[in-house]
Length: 533
Image (cartoon, rainbow, N blue to C red):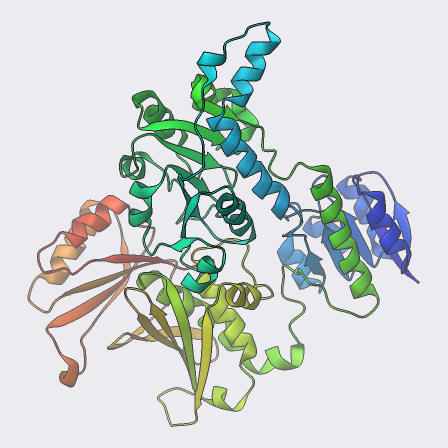
């Protein structure tokens, strides 16, 4: 019979589920050395945030089949070590959906009806009704940024309250948004000035970090109210404080903060009655804590009885027989997909994948997964080879595949075309020798570029001194060029515009990028950051 270790404080209902299929040891949280000593005899482990599963621990987990984290985050688990040891890692990404959505609505209503301040006042024996006159949300406009399950439930409740709801999410379709009675907005700049309330439901990524700042706040309707129950750092706290003091923002309801370990230093604590603040309570309901425990316990029971996990966060569930013929191309597929996403513009509508040469004769479903991971990871965190297809389907992204055995210059090549709201992208890649990646086509330009962590795409008029001008800007800003290539279109498509692809030793600042874009003859420079695979 399988053996399962349960540590931390896991709800008894989860223990009951696992005990039906395995022998369970429910023990207190252990140190790393204690885990190393004991973990080898277990087939599964259920944990919360207290237990740390390091590489040292996981290398000792010789019989481990599945790690279950009762919650969303998996920061306390070395995912690379788990994957290397063939261990499935699961979490419960949806267990706190209702809790987080309800907290968002509660924060919004508390803010406009002055609940916290009025409560404090009356407990002092005061009767100051006139000081706490609120406003109604009925007929007001709520902007929802991010339309995953939490954003969807918030929108559903807001519509029921009689609010007009606008939604911005580049990975959601107009049809999906309209099913919830909301209105789809293509550009964030169109959302800001229309909203009386704005709520954020996105992960913190390079695109969403500092998304609400002095510039975006200046585009909002005067007297807007802002809610953030998603992630600290999406909202610039100092800019929010200034906007409250000026009256541009009438009120805030914030549950998450940039530095929660040093909350006493947060500037928002000084904002008085215009600020409704809570200590990261979005998932803190009894039901949510039970739900996440039951969810992962059911997955453990399923895996231990020969089934599949529903919320795996790493790669072992990919079949070896499918992965083996294409494994050398997996990194290339992900890199060119990420490159394509970063040079496109607007909401993603569909992905077209074309493979040629030897790849036309094998099952390329693992490559499709890698491409989806590359595309989605540019805007979302937590994307992996297991959940990328599910998220793409959930967000209504159409994927089509073409295969051609037509002779090409490479043994096998992959092309990814993204159809987007404003600007499409078409990027192809191939392997040189066995494991050397090259980007061989960008839109209408043929070239041979090595993928790199920091890259610039610089369209420019084909005339003298353009390269020198760009290089001068980079040099003056202390950015070293490691590699560079210039490409022109084929004669039949020639329009006088060439492109430079520049690999740099480090990332380029927005200021430097603007200087390049402002050069006469440059047609908009873009920076691409690849997490090389």
